Image (cartoon, rainbow, N blue to C red; front, side, top):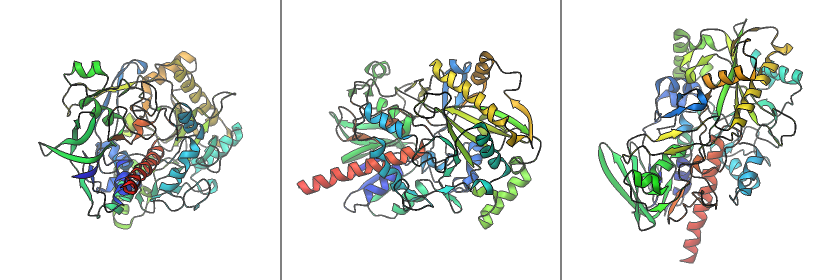
Length: 537
């Protein structure tokens, strides 16, 4: 018998496994559907490009056809490997805006304001600036900050100069006291390798005798006795197995897999469950609803000088760079390639920025799987707080069948208005004198695309997810909430959810840092509960 069953060894699950197994009297079992993260692509900071092309460590999900994207389907990557999406993502560390978390608290997620969350952001990070009131200096996740502007590539320098020329503020720390402006990117790689939660938290805990890690084990059903979670059924090597607990089952499968597992187990919208012949254990209408994601649209610009990363994508140089890393832990693959980020308001009167830019030193299509063979760069913009809402629902009662993922991108017209504005601001930046030295022609949308209607059509034809889905098991106390502020599933004993699905609203930025914060905070909640039981006994 185990005290805790954690379903999913991803960004949150590895943190939970470490923190809960720190008590030698607690028996912890960690289940992961994927396998090892030992391949060089999982370790090398630039390895995510290889992962995108090969599909390694990915569930391989696709969303359903999107009316807001001219009927297109879309690749919807989610990590299926030790470390989860922290092992395959672009390693960008953005907390989000303080107002995001204050909004959570105001909406019913009591105890999740930015002031409440800040200690847990600081707890996971090891920032080169050391411990301050706002940054952590001794956590497991090593943080690298892009170099100062004067030490950047010509492209990085140009973005900062263009921002100043266009009247936008320069921000010394985008994860500091304010978010608005252009700033150096924080990333979770350090030294020579990616700082996934597997490479850090799980690696530290893996030798503990009270922690059992079972990989290649896909959870298929939560086991209940009346309204109490007592275990998990999982598939491994073609066989169904079960594991039981007298403590807690903790779902950490993420925004797609956690609601799917709940629905397969009889927790969710009653009509959906009955349609698939699943007995209702607990009716919760919000399971799988409230799906939010960041979708990006890009201005792609050719340039007249060889300042892009194109040369390193060609077979010979790519092979040399890979060998350089493998043999000497040096070379261009020691970076994720991102120097500058920006958070900008599209109009006056906004409380805080509504768009985010990633400035990329390469031209590509199809989620990076197709490199455009021209020297160029991209301003990739996303609506920070989209209003569109979608859902995740099971396609059948078969746990091995992928669920139906429907983000309903641009179903709220306000998102299109903001996306359109983001392209115009990107063009304004690229038109600044900072780019005169090497600005070529606009590759996309193209200078003929100017009207609202034409920009909207370009966005619907080309926009892609940047892989930040959240919200399908949100925190709250209203009828559509799935978990309470302690992350306990409403109406079910001994069942929690700790992953991106609990976010009431998406954060204004890359979501992985917020997931790690949630896991640290949840660990504290669970450990304090266990300590209370021990004292009472």
